[in-house]
Length: 172
Image (cartoon, rainbow, N blue to C red; front, side, top):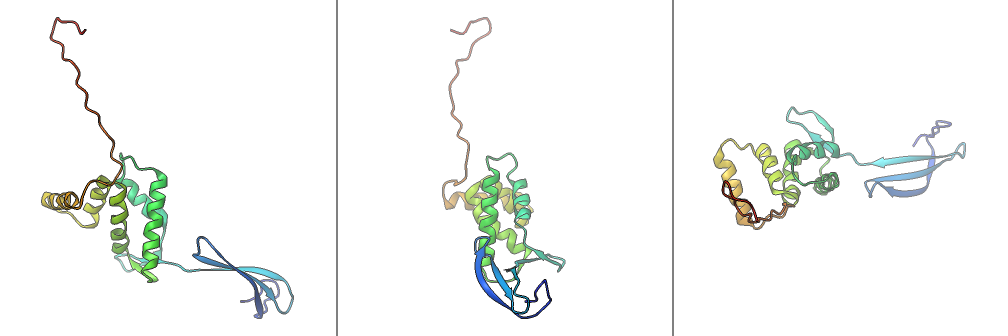
């Protein structure tokens, strides 16, 4: 590593520490020529390969933005979305590949989103699985029902009976 002060190529590592939940390493170095210290960081970058072939760094914010659209009007908090994005990134990094197709990112979102909210899952899945017909939706709903009870945060509705009044009568 080149010293930022004297431009010497000779330095030694004095201390190393993990940061950003272990996704990077911060190293404290000392230049062998001028004896000044400086800090370097090393991080691994996860790239997303778009359909066009272009690559760009993975961004949790894009995951949150896409899922937020599917969760519109649903009881899902920003913290829930941030946690989902973290789970997706952790899953993709665990695959051990430096470049991941964009389609795989979308598919990696489906499992944690289903646990979070099934309606949002269905909305998101309809885009990523390219639902074209009503039968596609029906098949996915049947699959959701076959796999068990909803796991998302569904609002509970309490039905109450209210007495009906007839015209001219007074409620008691």
